[in-house]
Length: 180
Image (tube, rainbow, N blue to C red; front, side):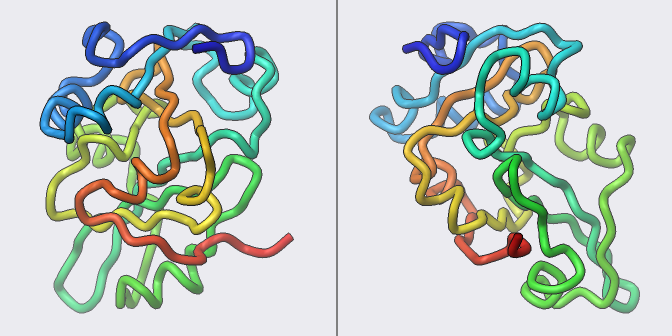
């Protein structure tokens, strides 16, 4: 399948293009869902959203960023992931903080995000995140026909449906993007 200037093939046909946790998650998925997860190799130097979209002729609205957050309340610290379209901003200090019941919410450090997910920074995907992490999916992401997300490595991207992302373990669909 072609999307932008990229050619995508079934992800499980090219496991070397995915982080190990993503491969394991796709293998555990329903066969029909797994067949809809596609992958394409990219230049790792173009993995960041703006550069990727410009180079591969894909709209920022057709991609979803996976943001890893560290939440704290009292002595308790936990992590969550948020999926928001590349063209939108995440309401971290409003909707997300309230939904998670956190007193303080911050972006996870690069070292923590990499160590806890087993994925490369700049390529982190919601597919294969730790089982106990909430995954908050922006409503516009869940309703999107086809979106680009990370693959767990910087050298490729996944093409998935919004419904697939909304169906991930611990996924919740919410309005978490800021207007405008």
